[in-house]
Length: 219
Image 1: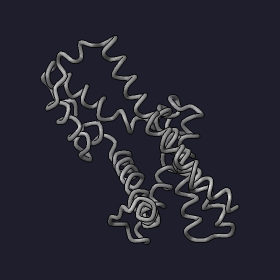
Image 2 (image 1 turned 60 degrees about the vertical axis):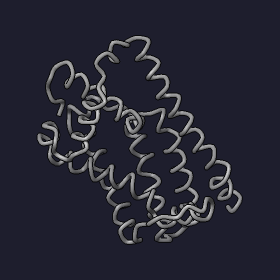
Image 3 (image 1 turned 45 degrees about the vertical axis):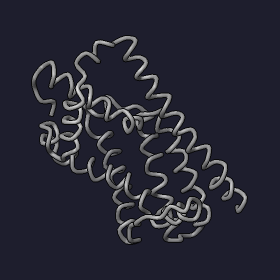
């Protein structure tokens, strides 16, 4: 068990970060290459100001019309993304690891707050799962891979919650927590999770087209 823990927190952690960074760079580079090759005209009206305007407005909850039409989904989506991003970054045990390995120290979440945010992420994943199963228009667009991705996103939080509360077999849950977190990191550039990388580009593109060509808002 100890050897497995050292492996997932040592070599496999490096592999996960390398795959994430290299994969992200390749995906973004490939996207820019395709744009330049097939749709170079986009650069003729691409506008940094319109792009940033669109990104800013789409980061405001209930700013875009479509968000106001789906109030519950908007609330869950924003809460989910905030908890998903900030919990692992500011979790005390993760901050300690940064300090021990890289001498980088910063503010961390109180344990109680991190615990609540972990449950929030799990609950949001359950919401998205049920929504895919019960809403016909969403179910029509759903494939098996969407459920697998939801499981992979929830897994680090479920196992982390069980390990933190030291339920029976918690050493195994600690290993599974690290392992599933690394798997999630590695699949980001190659699955639908890649929207984390492409969001600024797609919004900048849409915002530029609406602002510079159609002279309208895209939110």
